[in-house]
Length: 207
Image (tube, rainbow, N blue to C red; front, side, top):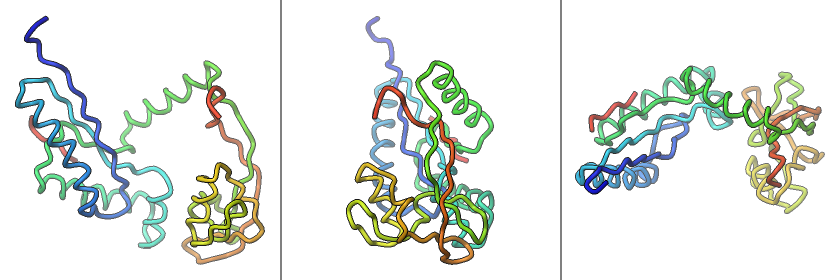
């Protein structure tokens, strides 16, 4: 029908709650804000949403670095980031967190549905284990030389291995694990995952 306002969803990238934002982050988010404001001025129905990403390795590293628990770290940086974005005048309709209950429920439902329909399969893979703490370590905690491409820049060796199309940095005898207790030799143990896809190899409310 002519003249009916378009419904526009502006899904802005979720910044990690692992440190304060810098100018580069703000520049990227600013373009989304301009786009949302433009469509509001045209009379379209705009929903601009985002929030802090509080899951994953960056938040763990920030917590280790500052001697905080992961929850303390993400709570701290959620407050800092939300305060900064309010001060900058970003016109979010909703700025939330990945640790909210409804977010957890929706994400788990998506993965369970995919699993129940056969799109995800269980697979056993080798993972790093820090002997000093008994902690299973994500790739970014692994220091060493990538056995595939020879990359040697500290923890980025694990990322390089992933870029090279493999996670075999985890099986390299030259790899070390680092954590809040410092560097120590890591061991490896099988872990089970279900993340392998079978079919593919106007008022701001922030805080």
